[in-house]
Amino acid sequence: MSEEKSLNFLEEIVEDNLAKGTVTEIHTRFPPEPNGYLHIGHAKSICLNFGLADKYGGKTNLRFDDTNPVTEDTEYVDSIKEDVKWLGFNWEEEHYASDYFVQLYEFALAMIGKGLAYVDDLSAEEIAAIKGTPTEPGKASPFRNRSIDENLSLFSEMKAGKYNDGEKVLRAKIDLASPNMHMRDPIMYRIKKVSHHRTGDAWCIYPMYDFAHGQSDSIEQISHSICTLEFEVHKPLYNWYIEQLGTFPSKQFEFARLNLTYTVMSKRKLLQLVQEKLVDGWDDPRMPTISGLRRRGYTPESIRNFCDKIGVQRRENIIDMGLLEFCIREDLNATAQRRMVVLDPIKLIITNYPQGKTEVLKGENNPEEENHGGYRDLPFSNELWIEADDFLEEAPKKWFRLAPGMKVRLKSAYIVQCTGYTKNEAGKVTEVHCEYIPESKSGEDSSGVSVKGTIHWISTDKSESAEVRLYDRLFKVENPSSEDEDFKTFINPNSLEIITSAKVEPALKDAKPGDRFQFIRKGYFTLDSMLSKEGKLVFNRTVGLKDAWAKEQKG
Image (cartoon, rainbow, N blue to C red; front, top):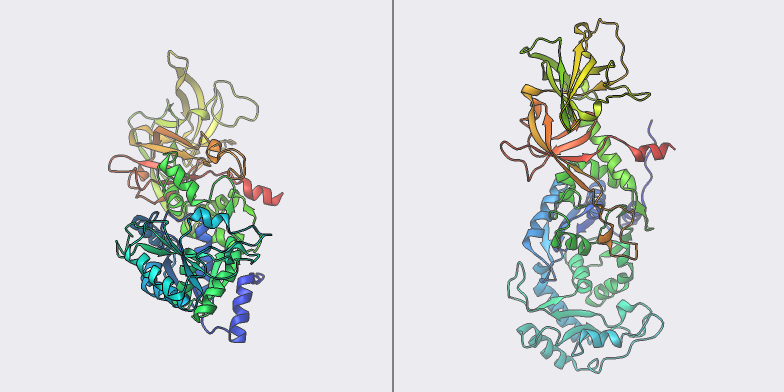
C-alpha cells in the first residue's frame, strides 16, 4: 500500500482556511504579463494554481497583467493561452488587467479623495534620490502636500494627455520612514503615450503592478493570490491598498520560484537570446520555454510530473536539469514507439543472402506496452545501412559489435559474421561484408549460436532520408546567471549538431509533427513541428537514453 503524500505548506493553509470558514471557496489565478513566452518556471506556477483549485473543488482564472504597453503583445497572449491548455488546464474565466482600467482609475480617485495619493512632478531619478535607504528614512517630495482638489485636477489632466511621459506620476502617501522601501510613497500611475494591445490609445496613464495586481485580485474575489518569494516584500503594500479601499480581502501567499541548472529563467535574458539570434526564436528546442520544450518532444505529463516531484517550498534552491530529463525519459520509455534510425550510415552487404530478395520481418513497437504495442514491418535484404561506429577494423577487448571474424545480432533479424570490408581512396570504410546464419532468425532461432552484441540496421532499398537535430543543454555551466561574466559567454557551442544524411526505417515516413519515438540505441526523438514538410523529415532529439540523474539518486 502506497504511503499517503503529505500536504505542502499551501495545502495546509487552504485546509486551515476551509476548516475555520475564513474562505468558503478556493479561487486562484495565474497572472502572466504578456511580454514573452512562458517557461518551465511558469509551468510550476500553473500546476500549483490550477492544481490547488482542482484539489479543493475551486476555480482558477487566467488573467493577463497587461499594464505595460511598451513590452506587451497579442503574440504573447496567444502563446500563453496555448501553453496553459497544452499543459492540460482550463481556466474558469479569462481576464486582463486592462479590463479594469476604468475601475482602477476610480480607485485612484478614491485614494486621492481620502488624502492618500498625490501627483508628483519629480522625475523617476529625483524620486529615487530622496527615497532613502533601508536604514535611513526618505525625504518628502515638495509636492507631497498638494491639496486634494489640486491632485484630482492634475490626475485628470494626466489622463487627458496634457503631460508628457515622465512629467508627472501619481504616488500613494504612506510612510517615508517605513523600513519596507515599497511603503515609501510608491508610484501608482505613470504616463506612457504608447498604444496598448487591447485598449489602443484610449489611455495614456497606466497603473503600476503593485496597484493593479492586488485590486485585480480583489475585483475577481481571488481567495489565495499565490506569488513567488520576491513579492513577499510587496505584501504589506498589497494589503494596504485593499484595506484603504475596503475591497474584497484577497490574501497573498509566497512560494519559492523554480531555478533550474544549465539554463536561465529570466524573461529579459531569454528575450536577449532571441533578439540577438543566439537561438532560433522563443520555441527553439534548447530554450526552457514551454513552447521550446514542446517542440523538443517533452510531454505535458512529464512536465506536470516534474512539477509534482520538485514540490512546493518556501526556500529558494536550484533543481538539477537531470530531474526534468528523468521525467521525460520515464514517460517516453512507457509510451514512445521504437524505431531504427542510422545517423552515420555505412553499407553492410550480406554476401550469402539472395540478391534482390526482400523479406518482411516484424519489430515490436514498444516492449513496455501490453503485447509489445503491436508490431511493424521491417523490410530485410542483402544490403543494409548500419552505423559507422558499429564496425572497427581491429576489435579491442570487450568489443561486442562488428569486426573481421566477429558475430553480432541484427535487431529483430539474424546473426551475421563479418568476413571483410571495403575502403575508399581516402582510407574510409564504406562497406562491411558479412554472412548470415539462416537458422538464427529472431523469434525462431535454432542455430545454437550465442552473441553478446545487437546492432540496429535499415534495408537500403526501403530506407528514407532524414535530418536529425541533436540538441544538448544550451549552457555549459550549471548556473550561468550566477557567474561574474555575461551569461551569454557560457553558451554551449555544441548545443546543436545537425545531421543531414541520416537513414530511417520506412515506418517513419508517415510520422506526424509531435509524434514521439525512441530511436533504438540513440535516444528519444520527435518530428519537428516547424521544419518538417512534405518530402522532408526533420527529427529533434528530446533526451538521450542515459539516465545520469537516476544513477545519482541510487548512489
